Amino acid sequence: MVEGYSDCEIVGDRLAASRSRAILVRNYLQSHFHLDAGKLGAVALESRPRDPSPHTSWNGVAITLLKAKQ
Image 1: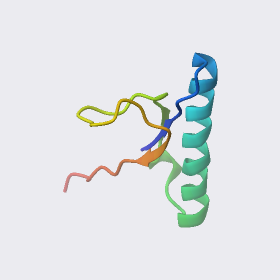
Image 2: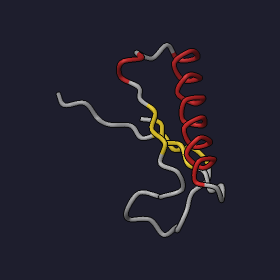
Image 3: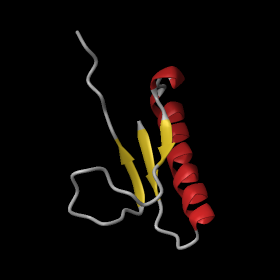
Image 4: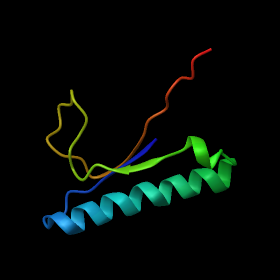
């Protein structure tokens, strides 16, 4: 999962920027590492970091890897 974050002041800009970042990184990973598109997602999380976090806001991209059940 690729998570996009943006700390723009305007809510609409924040959502658009965080979504664009997540999609850009997802597309890069798919094209450069030949990952299955069905197993790689993108989500816009605006500026809200995941709990628990010492940060009040984030600005960038995070990649979350989930371990598959065996």
